[in-house]
Length: 200
Image (cartoon, rainbow, N blue to C red; front, side, top):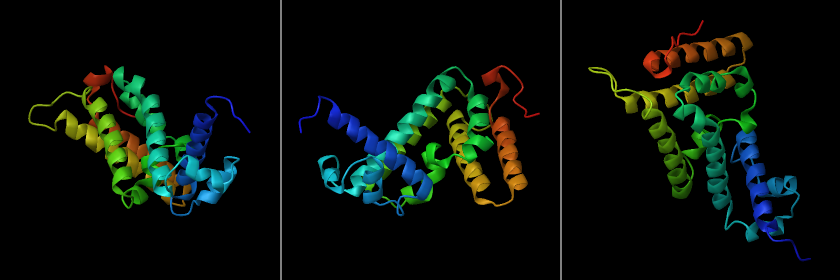
C-alpha cells in the first residue's frame, strides 16, 4: 500500500505521543513496545521502521514530552508570570493527570537509570528551562543568585508534585500542594511579578 507524503512522520509522532503517555502513567519499565504499538494502531513489525530500539523510543518520547511542556511554559516565563506556572503546576488537576503532565515528576527516578542519550537530552531540556527562569530573576546582594533560585524552584516544584501523588491521604496531599506553592512564592522576588506573591 502506498501512503501519502507525511504519513510516516505522522505515524512516528503518534507512537511518541502514546509512548510518552504510557511512560508517565505506567512507568518506563512497565510499558512494553507491543502495548505501545497496539495503542498507536500499529503492529510490532512497524516499530523498527521508526526506532532502532526501545531506548531510542524512550529518549525521543521524553524529549517530545519536555518540548511540549516547554512550549506551554515559554510565554508565561518570558512575560514574568512565574507564579501562574507555579499555581498550575502545583494544582490538584496536574497532580491527578500524571499521564499528560510533567515528565520530570512522573519519571525522574527512571530517567536517572536510562542510557547516556536519554539523560543527555533530559539534561538539556532542564537547563533550557532553568536558563529561561534565571533570566527573569535578579541576583540579590548577599543572597542567592538568580540561577540558584531557578534551580531550587524547579526542584521544589517537582518534589512537591511527586510527594502529593505518593501520599494516600487526600487532605494531606492538598496540604502538600499548598505548602509547596507558598514556599515557591517565597523564592520568587515580588519585583519579578510586580505584586505580592504570597498565597492567600
